[in-house]
Amino acid sequence: MAVSAARWGKYLLIAVVLLVLAGLGTVYAIGAWNLLFTNTDHDTQPPAIAADLGSPAVLVFSKTNGFRHRDGISGGLKAIEAIAGQRGWAVFATENGAVFNEQDLSRFATVVFLNATGDMLSHPQREAFRRWFERGGGWVGVHAAGDGSHRFWGWYLEHLVGAEFTAHILGPQFQVATVEREAPDHPVNRGLPARWEHGEEWYSWARSPRSKGFTILATVDEDSYTPVQKFLNHERDLRMGDHPVVWANCEGKGRAVYTAMGHRAEAFDAPNVQRLLENAMDWTMGLTEGGC
Image (tube, rainbow, N blue to C red; front, top):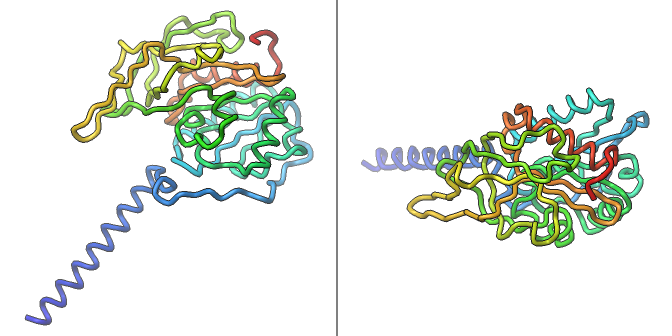
């Protein structure tokens, strides 16, 4: 009996270890590793950038010290590189926050925060980015670049994102909804229809950035999907009334655009999302006049 009990104890221990490993593997696979094991590492050695990078150049930054949208990052980068190839723009993609220094930033016309999350940059790196932006740089924030993991960076939230993230829909997590264009004459809306359908993990915010003077470029029709977060036996109403999903802001000489679309790779296969992304980069690079 003692031998049998010892064996069962061994088997139980192995089973528990396997379950823990499987759970950790799942956490990693879905991108939630840094939510359990907080990462606040800041890079100190800048990445090597080719001397012949070309101009104008786009910096794609997708560091994730928070939730990692692997699928959305890969799909978004593929779309950006395709657009840049058609337009003759150079692209440099990195997850190294040390690229945010005066010398390296001077080589880029705009920065795309492609699902970048968490405490990504040190204070000197944030300040280098702020100075570069206000002197005429551009910023395009995609999906998680506007989530709740950025609450520690006040200037970023106030002047680029402009809204406090509350939650995203759940149950189901992804739903097709109607996007309604506003400000049809704004350069970022060039070629986009007045209404179009898109499937997304729709975000909600405490209030619309319209109240802060941001230019709303598109909203989502809350009657076209179920703006509720369902988890276990709890339901949270995420309706905003005025529910923007794309907006722009001008700060100093800098131009910023945020779009809530882009959680999954297939979001970037949608022609309207591709057009929106191209227009946003074009405008924030200063290649298109107007909008401020």
